[in-house]
Length: 525
Image: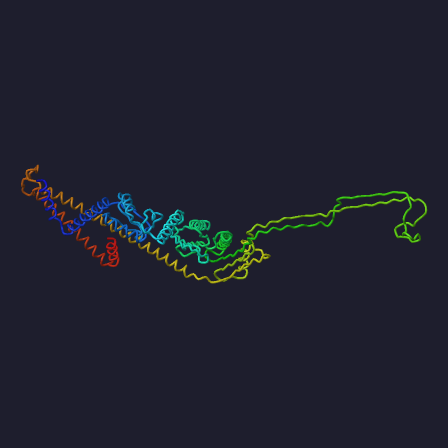
């Protein structure tokens, strides 16, 4: 019974509403139902998780077909390379697909020989061995952290009894690196050594490694001296580039502080000497030092031999003439050995010495000679300019092309304008939301007021505590209440008409602003 009374009251309340209030109430009820439905759907929807990622098209198609057979809902992401299914079914489905052998494009290694077929020819056995070896090498290469995917192609010629017809084996490896990953030369050389050691007769110089961008990674990394030379040359080039970048940053920092950002461009070319030199220098002093001295004195008595044998009358210079009789003589001999001062210097020049520095500086706008000379001196001090080794510094005044800068500024201004426009729209939307909230509050207040009035009108006469008696000159209570309600209705009607008149006046005075506001409300909805 109570339900029927409620339905009757609801029907009576609905019939008592104006068309505008009915529309507002219907809109509020519909919005509430829609929000409730969305919330229930959000709570009830399943959570998806990746089943497989980074699949190629063949594997993805096979997995999708199998999921359709198993009646498991799925979603595709990352342009079809990632498949997502409900989170609670990921591990079970993954095991089922692995057992079914769906992912065939990954290839089979030596699992090909788990089941030997009868009647297999030597050629088929040779091809299967090559396929299995390629897959095993691919799996091993994928263990490198920087490698995302790899393909290995082997060329293994058939053995021949003729030496002249024998061909050496070769191999090609294609690598797909992970984003922002890079292989060091030692890692590339390790891949080459791995492939060469896995194939009989294959030499590292016959193994070619490239990446998916077409760059040859194995250039100059062959076995022996060539490998060391290639790695050394690459390290030398990296060292030169590092020195050049350091000098460019120094010069750019100085010129930016002086001329402003973007007003100067610097390029430095450094030539380093990587030859190791050893120089030994020996110098002798001008004055010698006495190292040893030997003095010999001889004394005796006898005939002095002063002439030539056979000619007693001939005298020899430096000797006394022969005199008859016994004579005394003295003989003294001194030997001195001198040693000159010796200085020996051994100098070892380490590789990496700077041979020459060439610096170019381009400045935006005209420069007077004094300003150009100042910039030249600053650059010379920054790079350690030495004219003796052939260093060069070039300073040029050029007009820069600032088209890109102007485009960037225009794009930034457009972005700022779009941000301001979004802020205005958000402001209008907030105002519209606030107005809508006020309208809803007013509707609720009117509903409650109407409900209270309807409740008072529906009271039975027996429940009225005091029954008004008709008195001459005094109106009954019911009549007074009806008069009060009618006056309240007339007052509300008068206020509503006044507001409508004011609104029409505002629309007549500012039609463009009102149109913009209505457009903003509609776009927000």
